[in-house]
Each structure stands twice: as C-alpha cells, then as structure tokens.
Image 1 (tube, rainbow, N blue to C red):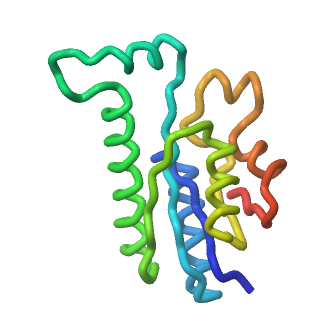
Image 2: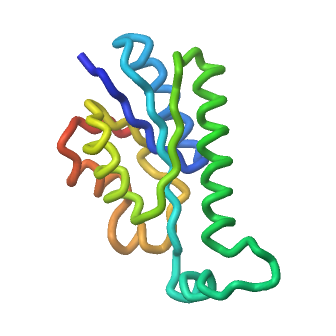
Length: 145
C-alpha cells in the first residue's frame, strides 16, 4: 500500500501522536519511515541578526539548525522505542508547509502523517495551520492526527 511514509515533527505533543501513527502504519505496510524537522526564521529581525557574526561563532541559523537536529534525533529515538524499523530523520530550512511538501515529492513519499496543530506561531493563526497548508499542497495522501 505505502512504500514511504513521511512524518514531519516539531517537538509538539501532536507531532508525537502523528509519529506513533506513522510507526503503526510502517508496521502494517512495511514502508520506509522518514521524519522531517523544518526550521526557519520567524521574523525579519531574527533573519537580519543571523547575518551578524558575533564573537560567538554560533549564529542564529546554527542555533536553530542544532535545535531542529535535537528534535529530529529525539523523534528517531522515539520511533525506535515504538518499534519502528530503520527510521530516518532529516532537518531542512524553509517555510514549513512548502518544505514538507517539496521533501515528500522529492523523496517520493506515498503518505504524510502529521499533527493537527504543532508548536505554531502567530503566522499559523493568521494564515492557517501547517497541516491545513500541507493537505492543500501535497500530491500524496495526508493523514492529520
């Protein structure tokens, strides 16, 4: 039925529920399980601050990437504890919904399983949730948990 399942994770409780469902789907179908954490700047101020190289070599991009990597690694560990077979975790920078959809298309995902609400921000309330955007943009089926 499914060969590749993508579960976007952001560290939220709903992302963990989606991961649990993704692992169950993997067990049922034998599909490859991929997890994706997307990070991005939340304001023009933060984006401009990341261009400044202070004495501390870690800039905002590096800090956000490292945090996203921690979330992805924790999701991979959780998937293994739930019984997933060979889960893979990825980190990408970009606008969350579009990055998720592009990643799914590039990796030929057959199914995206994601939480109904993530950690979110003000943009989510103004423009609609990431899950809503992904369901609108994705070429493959999307399961919202």
